[in-house]
Amino acid sequence: MKNKFISKLLFLIAFGVSLYSCIHDDMSTSSDPTSKEYNSKSVWKEDETYIKNVMKVYGENESEIKKGNGTPLWDYAMTMGRMDESFLIVPVANGKTIVSCIQVPRNDDEIKFVYDNDQEHIKFFQGYTTVEKRQPSKMEQLSSQTAKGIVQCAVSSVSMWYPNSETNPDAGGHWETQYITTCNEVGGGDGPSNPNPENPTYPYPGGGGGAGGTNIPPQPSQTPCEKTKGVLEKTQVQAKIKELKEQAPKGGEKGVKFKADGTPSETLNGGKHSVDLGDKTGYQGGYHNHTPSGIPMLSPPDIDQLLGFARAQPTALDNTNNAYLGMVAPNGMHYVMWFKGTYAQSLQTYSQDTLDKFVKKYREFDKNLTDWAKNGTKYVNSNGDLNNLGAETLFFETLKNMGLVNMVTLQRVESNNTIKSISLNSNNEPIPTNCP
Image (tube, rainbow, N blue to C red; front, side, top):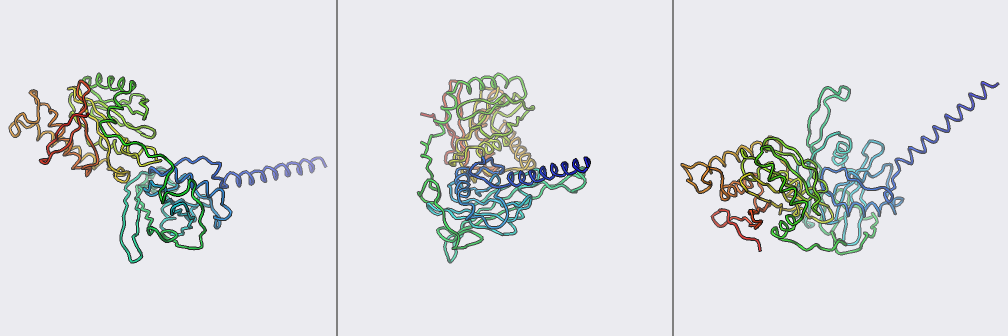
């Protein structure tokens, strides 16, 4: 009798634990966007203002909006390079399976939730949300004129790492590039792939101002001269640049990242001719030194890191132009470059093989400039090293090779801290102009 009682008691306990577990799992997987903090898991810089506002509207109206099973995975929402509070696409998951997507276009002060069952979109997000490694490849904005009006499309490609064997972790893996395309007609339609006039509209938080309207006050624009002066005036920045200048003659590169207020990262150790500044999230720009055996000018990998800083800028506005990277060399040369392209242009990425080819051209052009028999002393100092004209000519040639003409500005900082903006004249020769 006692054993039967114990058995029944154990069964009730087990049943209760099981019931609690089911309830707990159900609660943990339910969607409550209004209380869940958004943490982007996107490989791109996303319009977080728009995503969070859409989450709020969804949370307040989920019973009306939701169709079928599944929970929106807001952390994976993509705004497809549109940084004007106008559009997003978010995958909807039932467990680990992507079952659909929701596209949310905005028209003035209203938004709509359009369920998208495009199998290509579902396939893209299935990999995007489950693979272990992902990296951005390319993003393009396209538009075309049709009989119904202008159609705008965004195309994003992401490289994803897939294992060669699901059962053998030692079998390695391979990269595959996956694409996602979203289109919409300007000023019409309910959504790019599933127009449905029956979808209700919801007020967008903050009201009108047109698609892309924002409550964030416009920031006063600064010239590159003003930006560089602002950076160099910060005491913590000055101290780190001094440290890098002292490192330059010793050999070996070091670098440091800076937040917008001048707060530095720890000093990062690099190799003989390179330093990887790593994750740039939260940082406006950085500085590094070149060595006596290096070329005293910003290199292709440096320019690639500048694009990384541009992509890492806060998302409330397209403020990629706040990204910079500086270089100091042992011969006293000191240069700063600023990104001046658009966010979409900052998405340009290069494989290591491509960067290696750019570096090879960079070094070959340096040898050409320092060829006394060909150029005399036009591009070199008395000791044969590049002078300012040579270094600046090399820089603009490198921008051309990398397809970044007119997307990056260059400034020279003299030993007395005078700042000169470097631009090309009508003969494509670098010309310095004193900053006011």
